[in-house]
Image 1 (cartoon, rainbow, N blue to C red):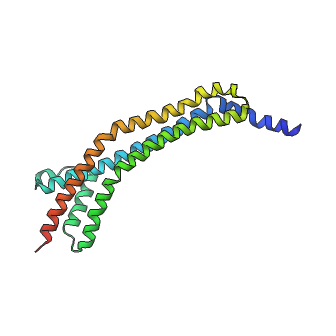
Image 2 (cartoon, rainbow, N blue to C red):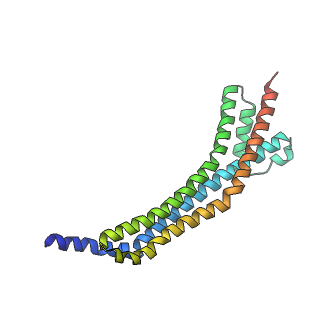
Image 3 (cartoon, rainbow, N blue to C red):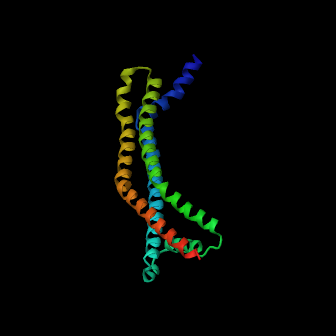
Length: 196
């Protein structure tokens, strides 16, 4: 009898949390934080790819007057490019160029990862909410109320993944392609300048 009273004492607030908005709100907050992290990550990496693409493109076409502007990202890329261009160690310069290529090429899989993660978190929130609700209630009829709340996590996960996809899908591919072309042209020009 004491065990039943203890179980009821523990499951009472838990049932309210699961059957009410508590679990759904917590899941939505987690999904929103993941979305914010994904957005910041993809936007930051895309900004770097754009800066690298623009800087190398300007150097390929010899536009020194355009090289003066920019912020901290531009200055950092400009300094890295200068270090690679003037490097006496050809192996180090080749590794640096390869690291730029790899960083740019990782951007599209990163976007795909974040989109997939948001979808999965949305579905996980729904399934966990239903599973906990069924465990606590023990009755399939009691699932209808929490089901209406738990579905919102799927809606949020899918909605955020659509937002990320629509914001960066095509733009990201275009910038990565442009970066690869500018990097290839810049590196060919650099290697030709080093050749006697």
